[in-house]
Amino acid sequence: MTSIPRLALNLTSSAGFAALAFGALGRSLPLPWIAGGLGVHAALCTLGVLVPALDVWTDALSRGKPGRRRIALTFDDGPHPETTRQVLARLAERRARATFFVLGEKALSYPEVVREAAVAGHEIGLHGHTHDRLYALRSVRRLRDDIARGLDAVERATGTRPRLFRAPVGFVSHTVALAAEREGLAVVGYSLRALDGRKTADPRAVLARVTRGMTDGAVILLHDAAERDAHQPPILGVLPELLLAVEERRLETATVSELFELVTGPAPR
Image (cartoon, helix red, strand yellow):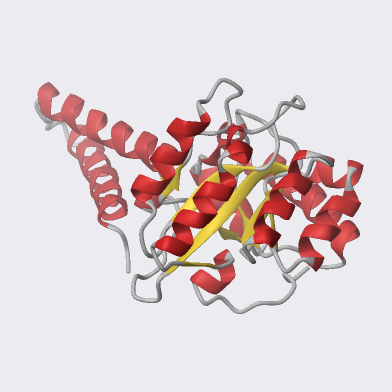
C-alpha cells in the first residue's frame, strides 16, 4: 500500500509537470501557486530523506505490526572489539536478541566480533562500507559500489551475505533507495531513535527516551560502537535497565527479520 506522503509527492510532481505544460501553452499559473507547490514538493522530498518511516522513497521497515508483543533492538556503527562485546554480554545475560548493522570497513578490521554476534544468534545487517555523513547525497553508482564492498566484507566475516540495510545516519534518499533495491536489500528505518550516538549524550536521558517510546512493534535505533573514535556509547551504562524494562512490559526482543516475518537466507548475488 502506497504511503500518503508518497502519494502527496506524486501529486506535487504531477502538478509541476502540469504547470510546465500550461507555461508551454502560454497560460502561466499564478506565481504564488507555483511557489507554494514548489515549497510543498521540496518539503516532502526533504522529510522523506530525514524520516524513513514516512515511506516517501521506499517501503522502509520502520515499525512491526502490533499484537505479537515484540520489539526489535538494532545497533549501528559497529563492530568494535570492546564496546560491541560488552553489548553482546549484556544481551546474553537477558537472552535478548538484536540486529547489528555493521560497517564493512570495521568488519574487515574486526571480523571475529561480527562472527561472535552471528554465532550468538543475532542478525547481521549492513550499515554501508564507510560511514559517509553525506551518504544520502551520493550517486546511485557510488552507493552501489559502497554497498557491494560492505556486503563482501560481512560475507567474508560470517559466510552469509546480509539482506538488510540501514544507511549511515539513517537517511533514505531516492538514490539510497535505488541502490539498495538494485543490490537486493531491504531498507530498515526505525520508529524510535535513542539519540545515543553522541559522546555527550546523557545515559539517563537515553534510557528515559527509549522506555517512553518502547511499544509493541517498535524498531529501536541504538549504537554498539562510536562512529569514529573509541568512546563508549551511552547506552552501555543503561542497557541492563533497558532490557529489564522490556521484560517488565512483557515484551519480547526479536531480530528485524523476525519482527517483520521476512524470509530468511542469504541475499542474492
